[in-house]
Image (cartoon, rainbow, N blue to C red; front, side, top):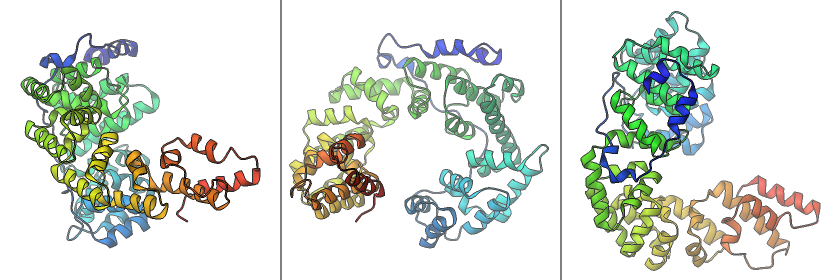
Length: 463
């Protein structure tokens, strides 16, 4: 595989290899999986997750960078601002080096921890070092660091320099669609950097998008550090039929690379004891490659907790086949979901029905569920039974879907064009935009009315 890149053979050869598929079920043979992740050079300053920042910081992010409140709040939860430097200083420093607000927004969204870095002692010297290097340009600096800001989290100048140059070369090659020339600038043979660069080039040739490649390149916890093991793992993932342009491809590569053969065999046997077939396990892996990483304890806990929802064993199997990501739901999260829905007036049987129809119900926060319940039931006056019949409405965006459509429905009712009774909830929310407009707007012959309805629909705010 490496020779295809290093000796300049045509992409068509990789394409042929990419189109390989298994003739047998890959999970019937645990040898299709490999061991654990390799380590890589470069240390990172990693912020602790789940810690809340001050409200003024959220406001500052919204006011200074134009971030949405939701995004700013998400960032503030991922870093602890208090006593950890001055975020304003970081923002000012980035602007002084030519970063636009759009680029800074991208940087902070990708790497919130940068906001708590000491701007004067840590961040400033790194930016100056990169700018002082021969051939450095302001446009290169801002583009590269906007795409991979975690380079600034590395501690050593050598690591910063090496990975900055790697990213720069890949971006240049992407713009010219010429990856072959990169083969002549690989780091010294046998080094970890050489392995990473070569592996990333192979992934790029296979079609993995740039944005995923660049993060793979600088991360320690990714399967791009080795050689033979990387080659074997990549071959398996391609043969399994994962599309390299999707995020699942990278997830599958991580899973295959990290799992020991014995672990795969044990997990498959355990799933079989629960009632799944080997074919079921393979299909679930295709939907959520990471699900095989869950321990038997975690799987058992999720299985037993789902029984609290009122589901029977065969219903639990059906649910998990459809949404294997639910294996990752904590006991507390499932308990909270049950409590939230029961607290809103749904019976336990109704909740069980909703989970069977739309398993994602388990994953929504209490705030999300209550907010959508208040709008659909309290404000719009749909009965609870409509939500039980169409629980997917809890997954629709309130601002982008539910509110605009409901405003239009209310307008039609006020004009006595729908009668006095609300149409079924599923007829309003559970159809495509095109179907909705055909059903409630374009059906009218009055052009002024159609224009008025379209204005209501596109305005999309709560009236």
